Length: 315
Image (cartoon, rainbow, N blue to C red; front, side, top):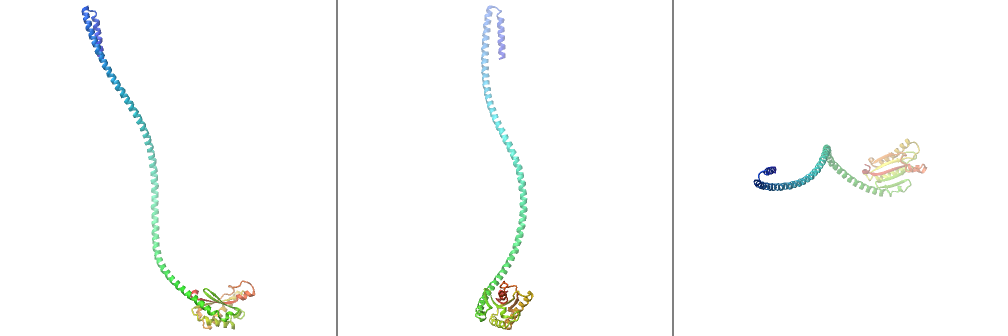
């Protein structure tokens, strides 16, 4: 573009010089100059148009590039915004991860502590179980021995139960033999039947002399009659309990009751009753039948009781 302008300027200069020459030469020269001028001007115009098209094409390309750049910028801005969001999220996740890691570390420490405690507890439990197992072994041996002992005791109890049942039958038979005796029709002599024993009660005023331990004639006759029935039941045992009233000193009453029980036992032995089956006891005034402080009550309390039991029940 600049070179063409310079050529154009030179032509104008030459044209100006030619104007000062002769007319014919001037015309010719003018025509040539004008021809060259218009040719140059046309070439210049074509060149300018060509350059203009080139510039327009470049402008269009530049605008297109600018549009693309703007689109890319917007895309970049959008991506940048997303990157910022991702960065914020990653930062948040990082902080959460740090916190979780700290919590996890704390939980791990807690779990390790609990694990150590659990191991310790398991060891203690194992020791307890071992002790229990040892105790079980001992108990098992003991249980076997106890079962054997229990079986023996059970067998003995069954045997004893059979004996007791047989002796109860014998007591019932003895009652049927004693109850018809005429002596039980008299006042002050009684026969009482209980599930595991028979009891013969003799009023002390009827069989002893007053204040004495020796049997009177009536007493000796009653003991003889009773012994005649009782000694034939050789496996039965008799407890002889003598009781006094509450008059007099306690020491005197102990002596009197003991001597009266012994007097009955001696009389039964005299009538062939086996001594080992007799157990005389003095009870003084400490087991009264009647608690009233009257003459009738004292008479009731002065008594001798023959308690007839089987050997198995006594033992």
